[in-house]
Image (cartoon, rainbow, N blue to C red):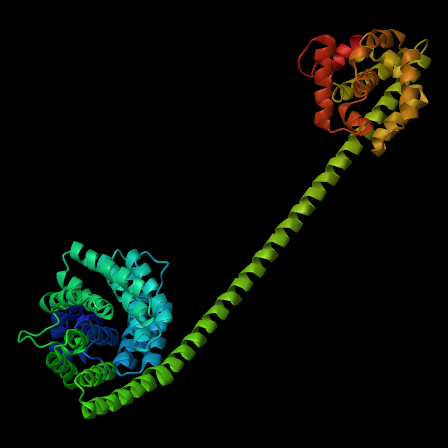
Length: 564
């Protein structure tokens, strides 16, 4: 018991610190980082699971606090742990933070690989899925493609980021994606799209009282206005950016990451012929930014300004610096990183597509096999049911014919012995009564005592042949039907005469049904002899009962026919 208590204490160590950091992470990441850094020494004594959680939260807090992650060395250990033991959300976060570390180390292809791994680890089928995190992963991939001057692929990532932002109901993230899409369209030279998305984002930022974010959009519009020589609008956009964007220190100096403002200020003063001011801002950009793209822009601006000032030496100097910067930017972005990024993307996408198609083919093959088995089973069941119905019909017809013959034989024997063998007569009468009762199960009328006249017809060959057809499930010929009609006309003249009064109303099938019923053929025999379904025979009998006797249904039809 003591050992169990000690183990529980060790396992729970650090839970309060980690829980507090997680609560602060979204809204106050700098405070979460402070809590984690205060527990840095103590974290070494945490259980393995809590220590891995600590490492993951520490990297996440640094990332959310916009601190560079290139110095982090512990992420591989945390990544291996969560890929083995973590939940889908933890695996996604671990891959995402690993990608962010490689992003800050300048390895775009490896960062992209881990970002894609993070997307694959996300379980988007669960209602608890962190769609907001997925949106930000796609946004990071979009920014990588933007740095590599690959706007076509960048736009695809922004579209996915917008999709998951909408699923997460993260309105501001959705607007930011639209804002950044303007930059992608700018690389593609599609100015109309740039203006559309930038102004749309600007209006929505204003709607949600994000004036600093709205002002940030104005740097894009300033670039558009300067290209089209709308200098007053360009100045208004630059002033709003300076006053409202929050991208300046308290002393008025620009935060280094936003050096493009200096470039556009230089452009503005150059176009308004205030060349000294233009030189001032171009030099600020050149001296205060380590970004090769800013260096390239600054040298270009200085070159064109000195050309306008007719200072050839300075113009040549910055022309050479501009060419070197341009070559360096192209080498860094186009020749090396783009090819590596594209190759990695193509490979990973092709692998994923191939795996998906293989899985789809396997599922399709399995579905076809199941359908084939079900169809085969259904066909077998239908065939067996059909054979059973055929067998039942044959057995019923044979039994009925046998009973009819047996009845006739018993009647003949009764006639032979009636004069002097009273005891035998009684025995045969009992046998006849029993057979009548059995016959009653096949006949719809109950006047078995009136069958004698009809039963005498059983001795005729044509009647026997008709019963034989019913037993063999074969159709009689037209000549056989004619012979049957002649026998009825000859042997049952009164019935034939009365039925003939309706001849103008009866079809050929209805005549045959009346003859067969009069001769005590049962419905299952009629279905064979007439080649009709059982339901059809029933419908004809019902119709005849109404037509001849004015009664509904088929239940009284046989009795009515026998009374004719």
